[in-house]
Length: 216
Image (cartoon, rainbow, N blue to C red; front, side, top):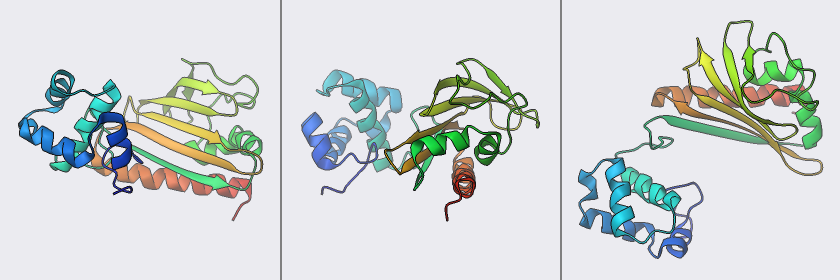
């Protein structure tokens, strides 16, 4: 059952057994035996904390979320606070440096954000924004910069008015040599239908980045 994944993507039965001493089905049986299906999320985590020998809080959350999916309580992409997240990524033939430089341009901002801030910094590779800076868009949309590392990533929090306030968006560039991987990830999406809308939205953004790089 090496390919079975219930919790964090890529967490196989072997991985959970090695870390916790039980595979997924054994955890589900244990939780059902303790009537966890009648408990809410915090209560299941508390049960695991008090009665199970799990190595970290991360594993308590993973076992809880996996069990909730197992009993049909959660859907793919739902997080512990009831909001949703989505991520997509694509590999390009261009080097990470070239990809970052293109994304750092005004055209690059327009490719993934749909528009460039009114006062765009001169290349995200030259200093770039600081955490706490607010980006004002021509459409009046606003983003707060949460973190930034030149050549690596930028993380933004939506401030409204069009996008749901408090959602976070992260663009990452990674890779080596002649290939780069661009990832787009959004957290705290309020509703499941919006998750699928944003999946389509970010895939289209990757299409625009691909066109900007001149790759078919």
